[in-house]
Length: 106
Image 1 (spheres, rainbow, N blue to C red):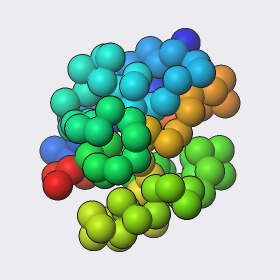
Image 2: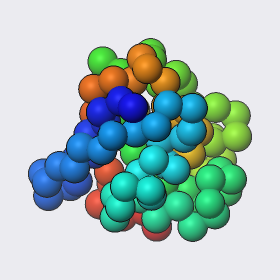
Image 3: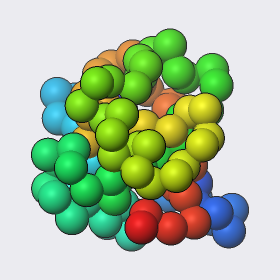
Image 4: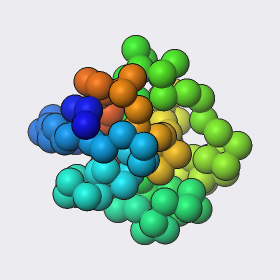
């Protein structure tokens, strides 16, 4: 397990114990992170699991993947650290990761 912190637009934070080997989205849903809607269940075609990765974590979480790009573009989210949490696999290297959730997932 690794600790991952989700920060909402209003500044409230929720730290979860995330399971290594599954996606950040799956961990968020399993731990009741309300801002992660995940309507498509992690198939990268709804864009409702977006997070904003803080700059110091972007190399570790990796760049936007080809599968994410259309959903992120369609969302209009221009934050440079935007990712679909369903496409970020939790690893031990993500211990202490901090992500921000957008105001709206639509």
